[in-house]
Image 1: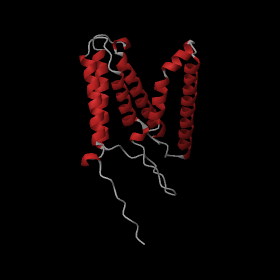
Image 2: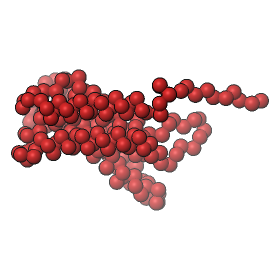
Image 3: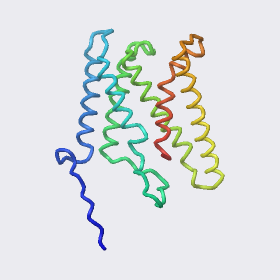
Image 4: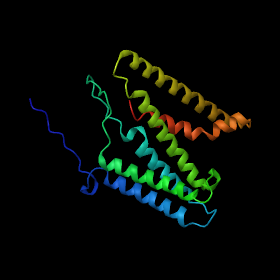
Length: 207
């Protein structure tokens, strides 16, 4: 008995997969870049645009951007996550170039953190969390298949990262909910978005 053929739904507007998503991401990033460059000193970028850029970064640098599809029951899971398609890598490169270019432009005359606009600092924090998470994850996983000992070390490192992320997230949320104002609590709360994005970025490899 033959199986019925699987019907695939065409991509939107019959464009290559990911084209609409990439266009939206680049349009949002370009508008954000333009407003930061052309806006008056001290002017704020609309919050909806900043949030949209954060969502774009979350998609293109988070674990779902490169994670393998769920394995069917009984199937052997892949040992490595597939590489991102060229179009996805291109969008990532353009986003990175825009954000880092903005940071460089902001500090060209005054090389300090205070010279970076608050709207750009918040995006840099999110992007920095994802990128640092990816780098740490690559360092942890790059040789895990060489021996059982390295695989064990990888498991321990993953567990340690998870415990740290859970503890910092739980304490930060508790401090926010209870209104704690200690110096330590303030610093941990400020780093909450960095902790969250770092952990999601660390799940890109070995997802």
